[in-house]
Image (cartoon, rainbow, N blue to C red):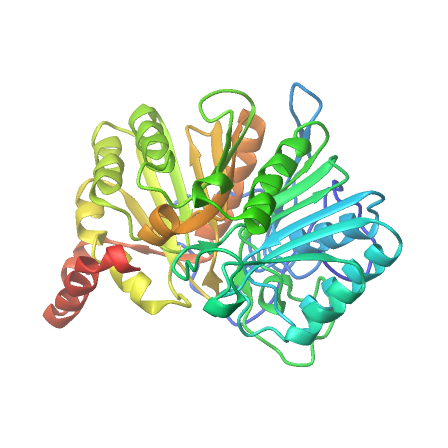
Length: 432
């Protein structure tokens, strides 16, 4: 989703961002991305080309059924979604946690209003807590223009049509166009995600966030419309929140969908346990909020001890500092198991991605914390394709180029008060 040139949704685009200097990864750490990132950049994608972040957007990958997958980095994903919405002819489905009313949000709102007036069926689900700071008049105008709006779990009890569930949130990010195009990832609708891809010069500068997304064109896109429909029916009819769950090709097939609901027997945990257990060569994990349960931590450590190369890119800066403290509580245990840990510098890391054995990729809205697993509706794509897996690995290497590696000797030398804070926060990680 973006600005300036009108790119098609499945076009292969290049992008970047320049800013203050940042320490690249250690000299002995691998950083063999396709392009070497410039020292002065922080690795955010603001415009086409690799000059700012060293990342050249790869070509689309075609699956056996003709579905094409396009890996996107940062605001180029919002540009692609914006253009797909602009070209929609029959149906637009948008599900998002945060729908801001800043310049980027209003640009999307204006476009959705225009498409509804043209006769396109437009359906939007947005989360009340995530969008709590947005201007209600923006949504009122959308509704008056013919956009079908659904507010997920209103925070005010008197606004609820059904039961009041303020703890359970819709954290998914999804767009589906005409059953032929879909896109999902970690990006919400707002200036911090879009950068200058939607509005060239936002009036109020903001800090930019690092994130990933995948565009899906062809037969595979219709599966994501079924996921959206599950949630839409729940917002209109109520019932058990389990109705929002949609699982497709969880353990087989080129393209799987994991739209999980907050339930005690979520399929997310066993799926992740199995993935870590079956890893044979490598596990790459880029995670914004890392506060996993003990079995997941054990799974990562066991994999490293049996010879799997496990590498983590975690936030050097975080919009929720307590979650970063919680992640750091486990560094010593992870490092002792042989796991490599890198902290992403210069920007706020919001990516949620995993690649196992360079062939199975998971990308979407799901964090490795208790909130994602036990409280939120989350959505991720499971992609079993070696070409796409290699692209994800190259993007991981690009992030390492803007990261600082944590060394075990240095980590063990941190102050005792720092150790205590990490321990205390880790005890409460189930609340995060």
